[in-house]
Length: 425
Image (cartoon, rainbow, N blue to C red; front, side, top):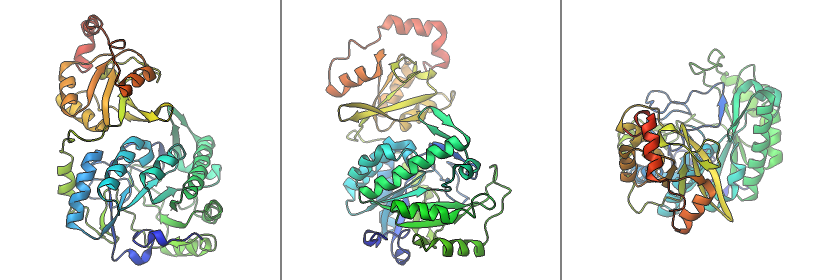
């Protein structure tokens, strides 16, 4: 077993710390890249106590301010975590910006993420460079035939996989994630949801798999039967079964036995959650505009196929988030656009979701969304051509006139009917 010395102040990784050290989950990651048959994510929920629910979603700069206020109310917090309500690495840009902001302001805080592992391998170096100390990977099956029963789909980029193909892809990425995290000195815990009649007799195999890859700890979590999910009629595993499974698995890997199945906005000591108490503070932080000096390392792009800038702002159902990497640029994630309608509120929601972006590249935009986005610090640029060529000019500070769309084209587009429903207001 690996040394757990770094976990002395982490209440989830060290049972002895749960009465003296707390954690706060920062809900900055709404999107998810897999669909589990036991999960129903809720973004404005105050009544349920389970993973996947939060009373609000924060932008990175809002999460920094919220964490500051939480520490004033509960100075025993030693861990800043991101556990949803979706998957942190399906929201990689926002997750990385958040942990950079927290680490810069609070260098002694432990940084912890909880992920399904699918998108972790491509960000291993970034996670280590950002100072992540602990990572939880949720692994429910190491047999694709069993995994196929648990996952409705797995989405890798723009491609959705189903059945055993989906489960096999996810498992491959999870293995890469665990091994890669350990290579970089990050403490790793496996979370495994015990699902009656599905994978409850499979946990020793998961434990053996995790131990061989070097994982430090395993947390067997009884499934919470959640309404409106395919598994809602399956009963919750009994306490006796959970005790037996932990006894079976401990010969392979150390077991966590004090999990409280935390919300995505959990606050405080384990077993003494203060998320309801801090709900008003969390809500008020969602109204904070980004300061002018906030770091905006990314650029959002409206594109049909991921190569050209070729969508009007109002046409885009989603926005690609691009950022610089050594030698070029990389597509980091895809964020959904707010639903059509709602007037100016729609553009405020979009601006908040793009809070880590300096620009949004589109082929056309109306005056109202332009003003709203600019007010939030996101400068819209009407351009055409290849995405990476435009990005090269933006990050180099070069003249963008070669990419700019002539006003005649924009006016023509609006005359053809794009204005009313496409954001011209």
